[in-house]
Image (cartoon, rainbow, N blue to C red; front, top):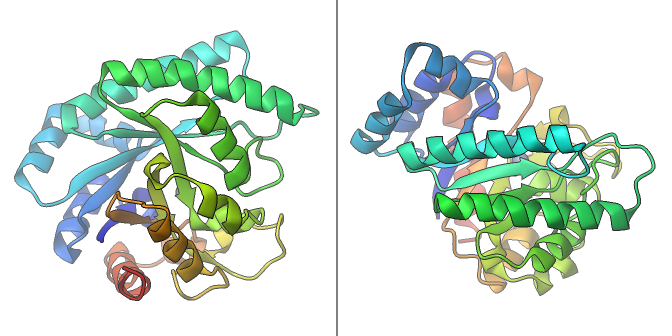
Length: 277
Ligand code: ZN
């Protein structure tokens, strides 16, 4: 099992250049690139070709782009912007060899039924999947384990991508989000492992279901999530991606030296990985 890190983990004191160096130093195999800030900042004084060259000459490789935000139940104007953003990410992906765009559902909608959410999400993802196909890219839906998110459990997300039924549209299973709204392990056990494109590894403090926030994330293995149960189930359903990606958003860790975050993050992640894979 290979290890990736998401740039959100050491966000405030680092940047893409530094993150890449730290991946090399600590032996991370992959990195998830943040398109909304880290990549934009990088492109102020680099080109996408510079980044492609870096990946060609180093061990670390790009795992996915984060994040194409709020794709479903949008106005036609806003949805058009999402598609433009997707095309841009696909262009970048083609240039640097990154195969996956992670997209998250819309949050804070008032009074939209499950049916309306499902219908919109399926229609959008079919179109997004078609666009991504032109670039040989994948779209991976990350459900968000919070009541304000329109798609907030594994079961709900899986029903959507099952209906979309495209080989390049799948799910990002973030362990924190899986726990966040009490997603069912039975739903995961019934799923096709090939539909899980990305796994975000993390843990959380034991706050009640439905009240968890990203800042509650802690080092994998230090919290209350049954990571072993999730990983054992992933193995049973034939998850074959051979990589998991550490993703934390903890303000305390943002204050640390990024070098320490990368070091501890790897140590904690490998412990969880070693007992499961
Ligand atoms: Zn995540």
